[in-house]
Amino acid sequence: MTVNKAEWITVDHAHESIISQVEFDQAQKKLRAYAKRGTVRKTENLLHKKYGAVSADDV
Image 1: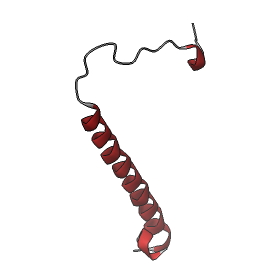
Image 2 (image 1 turned 90 degrees about the vertical axis):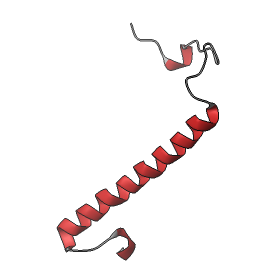
Image 3 (image 1 turned 45 degrees about the vertical axis):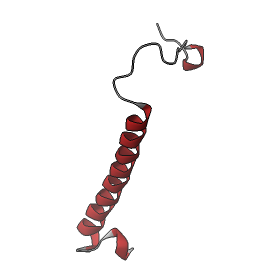
């Protein structure tokens, strides 16, 4: 059975957190930065394959 997300019933703070909101927010910030850096690295790898030794800074 598939339920549309708009129909979900959610309850905030229904159980005790494993980590604080501050720790969660800090981890999310670091994960976003890591993911963004990974995208730059993938771009650099593609550029390297196509044009030789270049970095995203050169583009």
